[in-house]
Amino acid sequence: MRATWWPGPDLLGPSVVLLAGGRLQVAHQPERAERILSSGCRPLTRFSVTDPRRLRVLLAQARDTGFAEEDEQAMLGWSCMAAVVRDQAGTMIGAIGVTGRSSGIAARGLRSGLLRSAGTLAGELRAAALRDDGHVWVTPVFDGRTGIGYVWPAPQRVTE
Image 1 (spheres, one colour):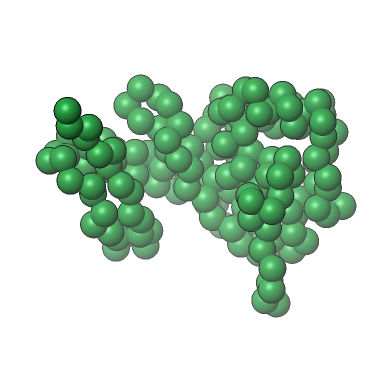
Image 2: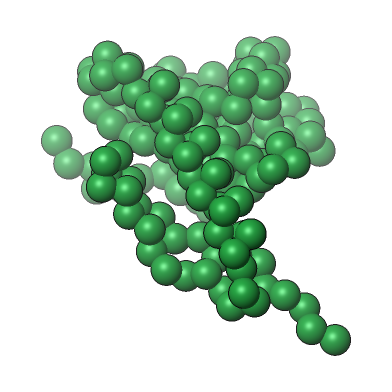
């Protein structure tokens, strides 16, 4: 089965908390989380968690563990998992996730691999920042062992 439409954060508004990556993002933005919890979000499927008490628990778990998962909350037949990528101070600087058919994503044991990949990515980003020579780092990196590819720009230096 091929999905012809995929929910994106720009189209979802407050319902972005139904996506694993969106839940991580909102969990690390307390004011935004409170706005969503107080105003609510529209369900996208019959499995969407929209009860404010349950959502509060899921957001707290995502913030505390750096991991979120959802099972058919955004699109029937599909599930996703996401892990936080943190800088050396522990601040969320991004997330890495995987989406797949609901019947197989949890059974494949992807959680530990995703958390490891997020940690590896964070380490590579720290190493890239240490060797930053003032140029924006846009060289694609592909890890042949894990099959994960990414590009991450280093912050540009401000010159006075």
